[in-house]
Image (tube, rainbow, N blue to C red):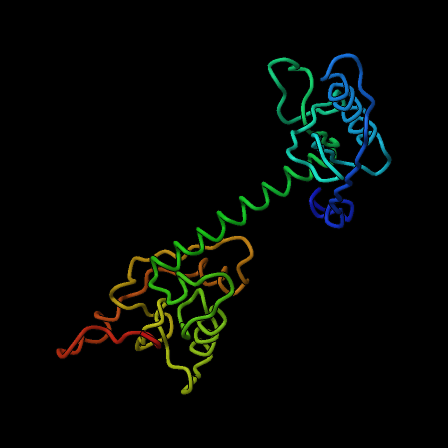
Length: 237
């Protein structure tokens, strides 16, 4: 069963603004007409909340001239079940929400929060690995990165080829951070103790790599570091 915010009733809902201009007869007192208009506005809001297929209602009302309002205030009405009231009438609120629509709103808010947390977790794991795409914005793609988070299939293929005794000369072995290493599965000195982080939605290849990724002997133990500089940087650095 899909989440409440993924149902057609919620995803395909539409908000409409209906403007109604009314003229109300006055009385002996100057403010009588305004008070009567406020009562009518409350009745209209109440009626809208009871209309078929209506799942949310808010209303504003105020004096106007030739259909143009000078100012408007939120209408408090008895059918409203959320929002704000007034100290004079605390039992009247200014927003009606259908219970199922409210659940969908809460579901959407939760989904957005989870998505934000997932993106932050992905950014943090990439940053800790030195990934070139750690600080990309949205779907913006930056320079090519050969780290395990950007190219898990390539890293897994290197291990498969090594187990089969084959070598891919076009794609040399790389550490999980993307730096060149002597053999598939090796790690450079900087990432010897690095733990891979798997998140929801990650490809199966990354999950398999994380399950089988021991802290391999670092490159400095396999091959002496060159005296003229540090480890080679990954592509694009």
